[in-house]
Length: 426
Image (tube, rainbow, N blue to C red; front, side, top):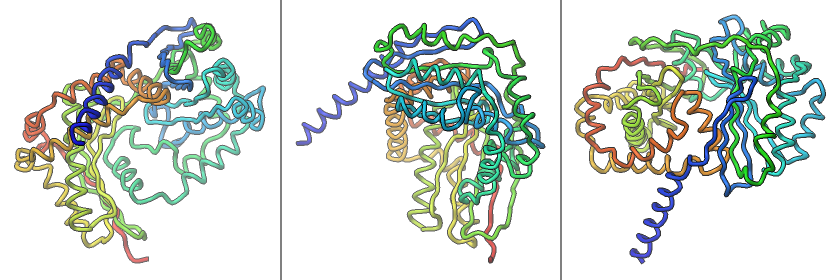
């Protein structure tokens, strides 16, 4: 029985390797006359075609007086157009079984959508209408929705990360993408229109399409529908975040549990050491979950991750503590695994688990058209090879424990920025 299982595992790994090698062999790139960058990936095994449209409008377009402006722009654009009211637009999308979602990140805004490949030409017609013919008539409704979302009580897990971001980062990256009630209230319809008029152009747009493009008659011609003449507009660069400085921020609130975040500067996505840090972060996540949550029961959750931005990355450790009096103990436990001695003594089994988790995650990535389209867009925006995920996968198979233990000379010397939310009696 074990021999059969081993054979199955070997076959699956071979299939994953073949898929990884072939994954990006069907990519095509070109530029429309109006400046739009187009990237297509022909995934012949998928009858779902996914489209990701990136509008290169970083958070530096906002000030501390109008945070949330970009979020309102993309929400209003996807609500209705000059030729479709909100109901008609929703109906047109639903009639072809499609779906679209506005996307807002620190570095860009955009639209993510998918449909059956046979309906892609109609879907492109709808997206063309959204992009080039916005009415902005739904501004007040979307503003009210944004106000409600910004005012809603979020879980402490995300709130403490927001606190760390706001206190630790120095550029506009500290702003919350959705905005705050007081800043959203400052935004008028004319502000949204002005932002669109100032920055919306082909030079600031990229369109990524993935799916069985062989099933669509002359897909290149269909994409040419987006070759709408738009006057050249300004282009904004993402902020360049200065290195962190060592700080500790504590905020008291009337909440049920407490939480902390520890952040360190980390290599950017695409840097030579990025994979080592991802693997170390996975190891770290396993250890602090085991020590803080499972063994001692101090927390509801405990993990670590890498936060990526175009110009910066950060290693983040965070946990929500179920007893405020134990938060210092939990922080010390987390920091232990950042010490030189502990990094140098990473156990073989802990490294093996972390490596397998990273290889498995990268192997499973990009199995669907939506995942591929989103991944290609991210790599494009980060100015990385479009097959960067595949590059990481191949490198991850060869990473050794020594690659992580060498970080013992780097990580303990990194500046740490710590944010805490402490519960007080209600």
